[in-house]
Image 1 (tube, rainbow, N blue to C red):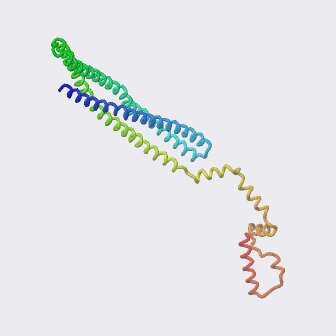
Image 2 (image 1 turned 90 degrees about the horizontal axis):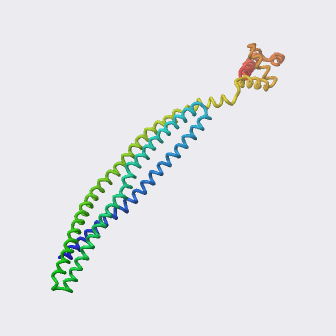
Image 3 (image 1 turned 90 degrees about the vertical axis):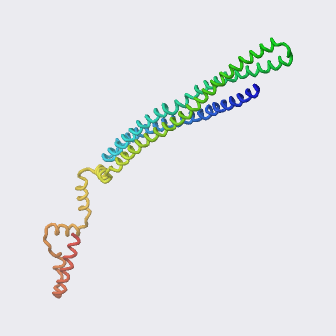
Length: 290
C-alpha cells in the first residue's frame, strides 16, 4: 500500500517538475526575444535621431519653403523618437523585467522540488530498510519497531513536503497564468499607445511636407541665378542682334509714322486697285514685323 502511495507521489512530482521545466524553457525564450525586440527598437530610435540631424543639416542649405517644411518634418520626426524612447522604457519595465524575474521564481520552485525529492527518497529508503529488516530478523521486534519509527518519520516529512510542493506549484501555476496575461496585455497596450501617437505625428509630418510651395521656391531659385539687371541687358542684346531692315522698321513703328517704305513710293504708278492692294499688304507686313 505504501509502495503504491510512493509511486503516485513520484508521478505527481514528475508532473510538477515538467510544469516548472516548461515555464523555465519558454519564459526564458520569450524573455530573450522580447529583450532583442526592445534592443532593435532602441537601435531604430538611434538611427531615426541620425536621420533627424541629417534632415536639419540639409534643410539649412535649401530655399525658404523647402527649408521650413523639412525642419517642421524633422521636428515631428524627433517628437516621434521621444515616444519611441518611452516605448522602449515601458517594454523594458512591463515586459522584459517580469519575464526575467521568472528566472528567480523557477529557481525557488526547483529548490522546493529538490526538498520534496529528498524527503521522498528518504521515505523510500526507510521503507526498503524496513522490508529488509523484516526479512532478515522477523522475530526481532525492537529492530523492526525502530525501522518502522524511522519510516513513519520519513513518511511524515515526505507528506509535509509533498503538500507544500502541491500548494506552491498550484500558486505558481495560478501566478504564471495571471502574469502571462498581464505581460502580453502590457505589450499590446504599449505598442498601441506608441502607434497611435505615431499616426498623429506621421500625419502632421506629411502635412508639413505637402505645404511646401514648389512654385515659390522655384521662382526664388531662378531669381538667384540671374542678377537684378539681367532682363534689361537681355533686351539690349536682343535689340543689337536685329538686322538693319528690322531696326529701320522698329524705329518707324516706335515713331508712329505708319509710312510706306520709300521703295514702294519710287515705283511706277499702277492701277488704283493694285496700288490699294499693295498698300494693304505692306501695312500688314509692317504690323507683323513690328
